[in-house]
Each structure stands twice: as structure tokens, then as C-alpha cells.
Image (cartoon, rainbow, N blue to C red; front, side, top):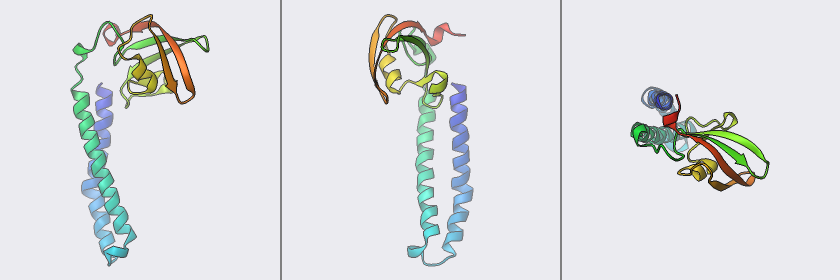
Length: 155
């Protein structure tokens, strides 16, 4: 969880620096070109300022959400954030292992899937032996949950 907070705080820091130091200079420089109605540099800088402010708000909200995650309240008997899950793909007849993580930690190529991804959402609250059917970008997939190791069982 600390890695997620650091990633969010690092992005926040970069954007706040841009908002408070770089963009005011860009806007001032663009104003020097004169007529603001026809000034593309000014419009671009103001649009960037609006986008940066919106992203800062999103990051601040996400930090509040991440800070509010109470690991002691994560279920110990079913799939939730932090669970490592072994699934059997019934169509491909192969096993696949995923760890459920936040969207910031997501790395599907390395088996780290977000709790808000299609498969992650379908797994939340499920137990060993359950079967799930998931619509993915490549089509419908059906899995049987073979093994679950919750965040509490991992080192």
C-alpha cells in the first residue's frame, strides 16, 4: 500500500510544481503576445492549467481512498484486495494465477490485476470452488477458482 501512496504522491508533487511554478510562467509569457482572443499559446496554457487542477483533485481523492483502506477489515475467508488466486480457465484448460491489487499497482502481464478490472470485479467476494464467467476484451471466459490466499495469509 505504501508503494501506491508514494506513486500517487510523486505524481501529485510533479503536478503541483507545474501548476504553481511552470504554468504561471507559461501563461504570463503567452499574455505578452497580446490579444488573448487569438492567442493559441495562452489558450493551450489555460487548458493545461484546468487539466492539471482536475488531475490534482483526482489524486488527492485517490490518496484519501487509499489511506482509508483498513487491512484488518479485509475478509479472511473470500477474495478481496491483496488476494492471490489460482484459477482454472475452463475453455483453455490451463491454470492462471492473479493477485488482486489497486489500479495503480495493476500489471496484467505480471499477474497483477486491478480489483476494478473485469476479472477482478468478478472475483471479489468469491471463494475456492466457485465458478465465474467474465466478459473480457477478448470475449467470454469461464474460470473455476482453485485456490485463494488472502492478504492475511501472505508474508
